[in-house]
Image 1 (tube, rainbow, N blue to C red):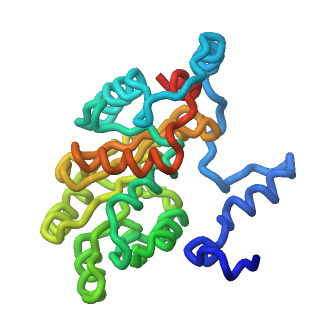
Image 2 (cartoon, one colour):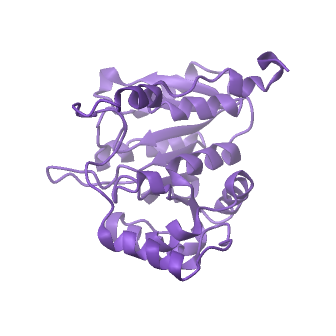
Length: 278
């Protein structure tokens, strides 16, 4: 069998250059790594102990594919207190890291041929997910607007692609790689153009707790709850990057469909990690 006989949706996408570079240079013990979004502290001891207890308590069987009830309850309460999210446990799916949550969301929300606006510079996974799902990635250069997507840029992208039904936009806040944090006014300015054009918001908020200098985190879900999907997780906030636990928050009905895409991709996150995450 030849490579050209495989699925071109996969063979046409290059592996992550960032991760390849990180793997190559990580062998040098004398460098300070500014590559991956990796915290410089370790997982807190009480989380490690909870994982060990889950092992000794034989919490090793299949969990419910949405995630265990205790974890979804805890995520609902935690993010409500932290950021003002308004989601019950039945509107939360536990994913294998934020990336798998993003993959399930892309797979569910969009049909082949539709367009997704991606403010650039951007985390490379968004464009890759658009490619493998037969979507048009509409890269919007935000360097002229201090790396903040504006309603004028959204409308210009729509006008410049009349043959492509634009159905989504990715908002990464705080942003990897630019570090930009959207203000409440900057996010609210996007509401009308997104609502009027019925554009889904995929809000990647995995860096939401990495705020400094008194900055506050906001989410478009406050104004567009029926067309916003939030992806978050514990990788950055609790240094659990290798544990692979994320959360997808969405409106009732839509989240049920995302849960199906998630189930058929991975079944469920690791049981031990879920109990430790509680």
